Length: 234
Image (cartoon, rainbow, N blue to C red; front, side, top):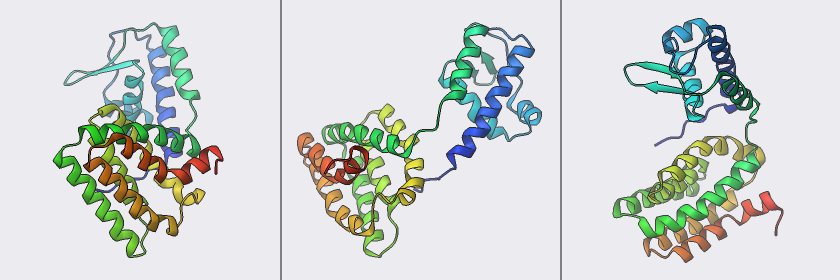
């Protein structure tokens, strides 16, 4: 498993441009709740972007409840008034890309929860996946290679073992941007990567023992450098 790293700022600019054009289309055609939008293919040709870009923008508007896609039928304007829809779209377009520090802070908060749940709910299959991610991280570090992706894959395996699909989705959504910025902000160095082998092993063993208090403490120990980065604590 490899994590695809995208340029979030560029992708967001494209998304926002398409969302603005969808808003203009709804207003120009006076579309009302229940009215159907043109197909993804037609929108991609009209806006001169890829169908995947259009799909991403539609999915974002679906997430906020402004559009509704029905398989085999198309995409429809949701049951919301035009004034409210325009206001919500304007708010969406004003959303800023999260800073690296806020992403890391979110990750810390999420993982202290997911590691507890993983220690309580993990299956033998989950334990196997966590161990495989741990071994892959260890192999990369000991060979002197960059192991940022393997590090985060270990944590994603724990999130999956938590059995909470929402937390898992949040982790998956913030992980690519964290990968992009680890090197940029010099949060971790190679010495810490070697230390990370023991810390990861301690977390794995606590999950294996199904000890939630110990698992949470070992995760906090592992995050001490990130705590220093986010909160300026020693």
